[in-house]
Image: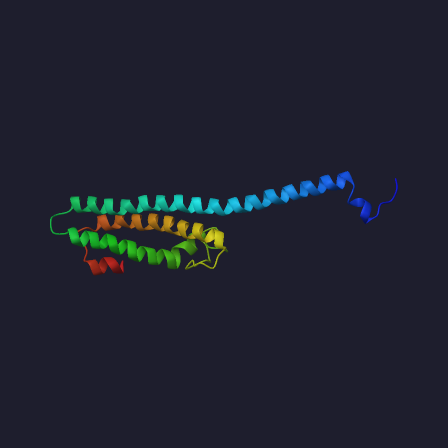
Length: 162
């Protein structure tokens, strides 16, 4: 075998094939990176749609609660459901998301990422916030169980303190 210098290496058929293969792999990698950005948007859209359906259950449970209670308590019941959403979203943003998904974590709970904000990776921030809204919708809807149990038994201020 003879030794080759740099000028003869460019004309080597194996080198040309290798360069073409590397170029093809690089272009495929770039296309995959562009597709990943779209996948996050599709996932976030689906999760937000599901969140809307779950939050619709909140009003349905409020209507069920109104049907199960006596006349004159309709406004009180719906105000409690609105307070559930408002205070529930604030509490889940302050504490719940960090306890559920925070890192570092122990086997019982998460210890970080309280008050999630937009300082995460740009492509994943939409998915982060849609996941927050999805989990919050479950937390807020589950509070209607307590609202139904204390219907006509508790003043609104006491319920808000609870």
